[in-house]
Amino acid sequence: MSDALRKLLNQAAGTHPVITPHVGVMTLHFQLYGCPDLKTKRKAFAAMRAVWGREPDLAVAETADQDALDCATWTVAALGASAMQIQQRLDAVEKAIEERIDAAILDVHREIL
Image (cartoon, rainbow, N blue to C red; front, side):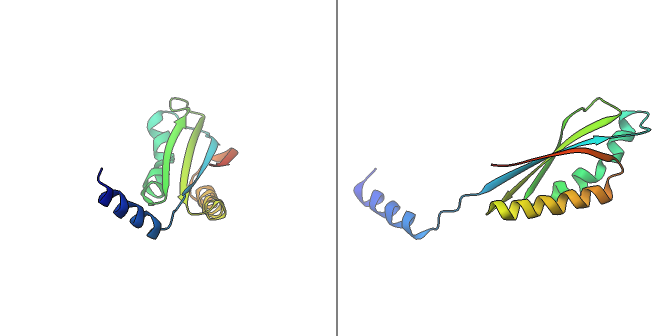
């Protein structure tokens, strides 16, 4: 790399603010009642991907118990500028999930990275 290019890169690096994103991970364990097959289970959780999977700051996936008919484990990852912002976002998502998903939430585990 030439000295002129190195000098330009050093000047440009000083003008941009450094943004350190924070990541929050929330894992929800659900109890299901009356699911005769996996198709019914998938329909019960269709909103998880349809609603929150389209949000630009969230990622949603079924992370365990994919073949179980009586339980499900879903994980929501949120990206934000601060830990407090992520905590508030995950609070709002958890409340919305409780209202929209027809399954009892047994356990919620959160971690801010």
